[in-house]
Amino acid sequence: MEKEILRAEHITKSYGEKQVLNDINFSLKEGELVCLLGVSGVGKTTLFNVLSGLTAPDKGKVLLASENGFTDITEKNGMLSYMLQKDLLLPHMHVVDNVALPLTLKGVPKKKARETASEYFRRFGLDGTQNKYPAQLSGGMRQRAALLRTYLCGNKVALLDEPFSALDTITKASLQEWFLEVMEDLGMSTIFITHDIDEAILLSDRIYMMTGSPATLTGEFRIEQPKPRNQSFTMTDEFLQYKKDIRRLLFVDQIAFS
Image 1 (spheres, helix red, strand yellow):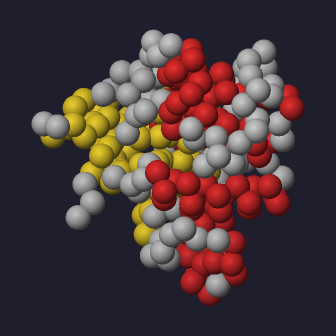
Image 2 (cartoon, helix red, strand yellow):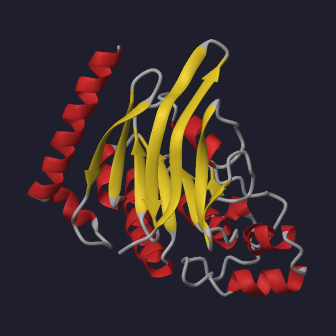
């Protein structure tokens, strides 16, 4: 049975008089890909900032699996890998040095860090780009580089904040299929946030619905279709039924909290 690797317990957060998150509870298992699905502005990024240790919750804890059970990592930076919507590649550095940055920041000599990073370039579809600059890459290639950099952080859990939202439809579809294959191959435990229902169904093992103001988790969907999946899954009756059920819950909750 898959082991839990991360828990969020009773996460509550306010900014001044405005409460953003209310009693958020969820878990992530090893090798699992879990989506937090909600409309723009509902508080998804605020929750990620709490999970990553960048923001302190008013209440609640973030727990990460360790040899002796679970360790409280609330307010501790660097325990989880975190990829923002923008790739944030440094324009003055070659792609290989951008990707190897997590290693050099940990004290790995530059030459060794480059060699280690380069070992993954073919698997991430980046072979031949090592000595290019970010401006010479397409949007899809930049996201691949950012994902590899996130992986090389070496943490057990990766947080991805709408990683494909800036891409055109065709590039996005291609990158989603590739992402499923590489995450399956590497066995990464991942939480990603999106407001795209199709993306959530295509990529996720489980989907948590995040709705309301303040935001709460109001539903959970388990996607039973085996992974990796491809775009043909989006045209099946099973996919359309998931979409109908999710849209129905999202619509009802938005009306209830408006």
